[in-house]
Length: 169
Ligand code: FES
Ligand code: FES
Image (cartoon, rainbow, N blue to C red; front, top):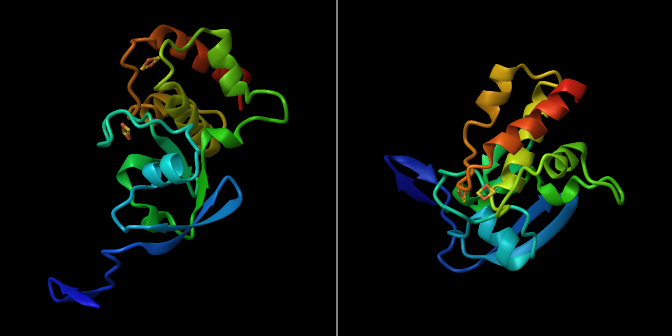
């Protein structure tokens, strides 16, 4: 136990420590240095690559995953901090052989070019609908405000979102 500003703080590392992650309903036990982000743990150790590494500094939303019903940037949380929480990635969205309706709407409306932002938008929108099944335009705007498409495919993205919003979640 170390002290930070007079408060006892549990210290981890600097070597590898056991880390348990619950991703898409499956438990994974890894040996990781405490500095490893959730995004790097998923992509580099578990080959769960739906969340993309683009800016790697909490600016673009390409790495969005849902942590206990809340969308977060996986590049900006340590894997050890995600322990004990339910982590959901875009890989969990398929319904059997069928795409999730949000994924299908992105396909129907040609809402991606390079595709690096796509899973982040889809996960963030899923989180919006999880919280607000009949989300208002303002709630959708707010929920997607942390996601950026560098290709500028916003026209298709807006059409895909409108397609889902009109049907209701
Ligand atoms: S890669 Fe995480 S926010 Fe851009
Ligand atoms: S499709 Fe390329 S960043 Fe959005």
